[in-house]
Each structure stands twice: as structure tokens, then as C-alpha cells.
Image 1 (tube, rainbow, N blue to C red):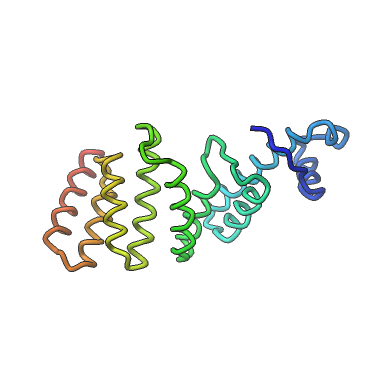
Image 2: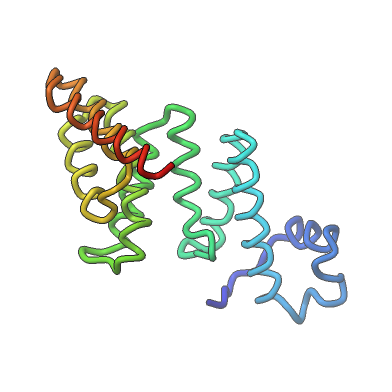
Length: 187
């Protein structure tokens, strides 16, 4: 997907400094520059996230989304990284907003492969709902996630935590046992 915005001079200088483009190429390769810039920023966000530099990851994702709101690459949508960074910082409402956007983009009946990715996003949003004491929303997301990926131990573990919070210890124990069984099967 070509992008039709012009990158800032500072960002062009960063690409030149990294050796990805040369100064004389800038006027002729703006689409390439735009795509390279977005990819570099997305990679920087991923690296910041894995180094647990969540504020930096959020800032970099915001830059990518400001430049190209519909940007996606092989790593997915920058909102997913931003949402997990928000959750890691305890900013659960912001994380829920980004996870909800991603879920809405998936549509009502995603393909089986997309459904597996969607189950991960639903699981993460359910964890945020759990922290926000929105247990019914968490249960709904976990139930949907389990339809897309029924053998994930972490779904059952999280749902056990929701049931514990609701005071439903019998259901929590059942899910915890299922999580243990699935975890042992995956080893």
C-alpha cells in the first residue's frame, strides 16, 4: 500500500544516517522513504516493547499511526504493540480502546488463521477487563477467544482468575485444572 504523505526532514535525516537511502535519492523515492520510515519506526516500537521501554514503544507507535493510520506490516497493526505497552503500564482503559479497535477490524467471522490471532487479542483485552473489575466483559472475551483457540491453557487460567474474583471457586478450580492439563499436554 503506497503512502502519500511527505516525511519530516528529521525522519528523512534518520533514514540517511542509517544508510537506508542516500541524500540524492530523497526527492525521487518518497514512497520508498515513507514505507521504510514506517517499517523502521514499527521495528523501533517492537524493540522498545521487548526492552520494556513501554513509554518509548507507545510514542513510536503513535508516530507510525499519525503518519499512516491504516499501516500494517508482517508484524501486524502498531495498535497491538501500543495496547500491550499500555497494559504493561497499568493504563488498562487505553489498552482496551486499542484492543477493541483491533477486534472491530477483524469483523464478525474472521478466517481460522485470523481467529487464532484474534483469540490472543481477546485474551489480552480480557486481562485488562479483569484489572478494571469488568468481570462479565472478561468472561465474554475469554469465551469468544476459546472458540477460536480452544486448547490454550492461558485462556483457562485467566478465566479461573475471573471466577475467583467473582467468588465462584468451584468454576475457578475447574478452569485451573483444565489449564494444568492443557499446559502438560503442550510440554
